[in-house]
Each structure stands twice: as structure tokens, then as C-alpha cells.
Image (cartoon, rainbow, N blue to C red; front, top):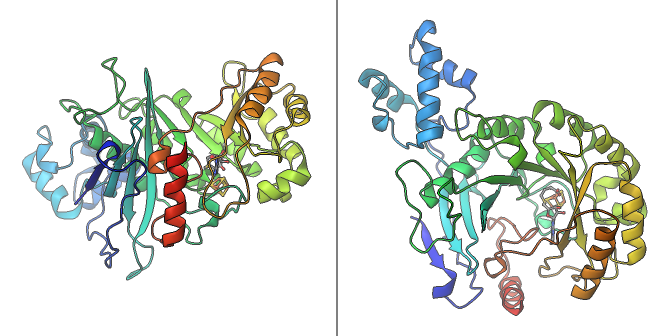
Length: 412
Ligand code: SAH
Ligand code: SF4
């Protein structure tokens, strides 16, 4: 059962109590969601569909799954009854299970998804996925891993011990879940009072791989999932509207350009190796100069397809005007956008968010140097959906941590 909590019906900032984690029994039948066309053809082969028919059947399934969003084989009226029965016997159309949905006063929605553990008998894993509506667009922030193997010192996900890669089905499944919950399939309607784009178009217009995990450390699954999400005969979100954010896994940046071809965002956060080594420890392996070289050579990069550099604003750590100046110098010659992110604090962190005045000064310097420098407004803070606050509930927060998070969310 999905528990829905409207933030306005509850004390502001209330964190939803998570349901107890009973032992999870993974589904006996695999889901077709997230399979490539070739894998779907193989699945059809397994249930006896002849080779000559497969291509046409794959086209039909693709349309029912990704254009119509059906959740039952019985709804596939253009598919013969015998085939529907055969499919039903062996497969499902299931998406990740939604355990909880939280709705922020600003319209942001956060879904907590439960995924099977990797090994039999293991506790289920959980990830979060966040919907951020704006006027004219709505962005879905998607996770690529349960937790993260990296340990950026300002990121809450980085403190989580449990890590596993998501499968393509679990990544595509986040988009399917969002569209299910928003009524974003043909004939559907959004939930009452939902804040969604009102131009009559689709309700999920953009995707950012900025949830939990490092997407370039789960390369194949992220690639396969994004190719499905951007497929023009299916979900059809253009690659220009999909942004993959990486902390700087240099060897996979060129591959991402060649094999995925979405927009790229780099979590830079510091202009000197000494500081970046501390904030983003992966920098010790792939220092700034190598990272920026990879950006210069990112396949397809141009003034029309710029790389976004993310820069988290940490008080007295990386927010001086000298840092801003060095940042401009560093990015010279790279078609770039700069995205300043106010730090979202979490219990136990050693950092503070920069003063607003300092963020404005920093942003103005960058603007005067010829860059657009939007400051990313934190969204959904009352439901702890902001950047870097996502952390799986499988690792339970202590009562003290929970109190601190609530207090934090309520002070803004
Ligand atoms: N692992 C990838 C993508 C997920 S993190 C990456 O690091 O790029 C998405 C963005 O949120 C990154 O730019 C990350 O640096 C930023 N972030 C992490 N913790 C944050 C926090 N507490 N406040 C603000 N931004 C944060
Ligand atoms: Fe992982 Fe990104 Fe968080 Fe670093 S900022 S710990 S790479 S999720």
C-alpha cells in the first residue's frame, strides 16, 4: 500500500514514518520494463514466438509499455489472446514498488521505492526519486545506485554504507512510476491539486541523473536505461532534456558522450586539487586538469551543447571571489554553464551553506564574466528532497538525526 502524505495536511516538514521492512520476497516473474528491443525479442523467443514475427511483436510491446504505459497484458488489445496469456504466464509489467509518496508545499514529490535485495533473504533496498515541477517544465531526478561508493564529504548519500547498482529496469522504472503516479499516460489525469506543467503537454519533460549514486560507476545499466527513456518511439524524452551528472569518472566521460549522448554535468565544487581532494575524494584518482581535458573532448560538446559545472556553495570553504575568478580561468575554452547549488545541510555535516549575500556576489562575478549562472533554488526541502539529502531509509536514521532533519527543513 502507498502511504500518501500531503505536506500541507501535516506539520510542515514532517518526515513520513517508513513502514517496517518485512522480509522481501522478490517477484517470481521478471518484468519486461527496462528490456531493450533485442532482449524483448529474446523473451518472445523463449515463449515460442517465431523469429519472423518477433520484430513486429516487439514494436507492439514497446508501444504498449512505453507509449501507453499499460500495467497488464490483458490491456494489450492488438496482441493476440494466446500471446497475451503466454506473456502473462512468464512475465509481468511491474515497476519498482512505491512505499511512500511525499508531496511538498512547493509541488515537489518524492517517491520512496522498494527494490529486492541482491541476495536471497537479504533485506530489500530503497531508493528515492524526486519530481520537481516548474512553470513550463518538470524535471525528474533519478537514482542510479542504492547509496554511492564515493564519499564526497558534503553529501549525505556518501555516508551510506549499503551500495548496489540499479538495473536498467529499476532506472527506467523510476520514470514509469512517476508517470503512473502523475496520471501521465494517454487518458490519465494528474492527482487533484497536483502542481504540474499546464501547457497540455507531458508531465515529465526533463530527466536529471542526480539522485543517489554515481551514474558513471553503473555505466551499462545507466546507458541502456537512458537509451530506452530517450527512444523516439517510446517514452521519447529527447537526449537534450536528459542530464547525466558525474563527480568525475574520467575514463567513462568520453564513453558517455559516444554511447549515451545526453547532456553532461560535472560536480566540480572546487578549483584547486588540494580542496577538491577533500570535497570529492575521487579527485585523487582523476585530478582537475584530467577532468577538464575530458570535458574539452566530450563528444558533441559545442556552444549549443554546453557542459554544466555544478558548484556547491560552502561557507568559507570554496565561496570567495578569488575562487570565482579561478573558476572562470579554469573553464576558459570549454563551452560551459555554471550551476551554483546552495549547500543543503544534513545532521552531522561539518559544512554550512554560504551566506546568501556571498552567493549573490559569486554569481554576479560569474555573470559579468559572460556565463549565465543560475543559482539552483532548493526545492522540496520540507520533505527532504533537495540535492544531496537523499539517503536510503534502509539505513534508519537515529531519532536524533530525524529531529535534526525536521528542524532544518522547518527553518528555511
Ligand atoms: N553522483 C553524481 C550525481 C548525484 S549527486 C554526482 O556527484 O554528480 C547530484 C548533485 O548534488 C551533485 O552535483 C552533488 O555534488 C550535489 N550534492 C550532493 N550533496 C549535496 C548537498 N548536501 N547540498 C547540495 N548539493 C549536493
Ligand atoms: Fe556519490 Fe555524487 Fe554524493 Fe559524491 S556527490 S557521494 S558521487 S552521490
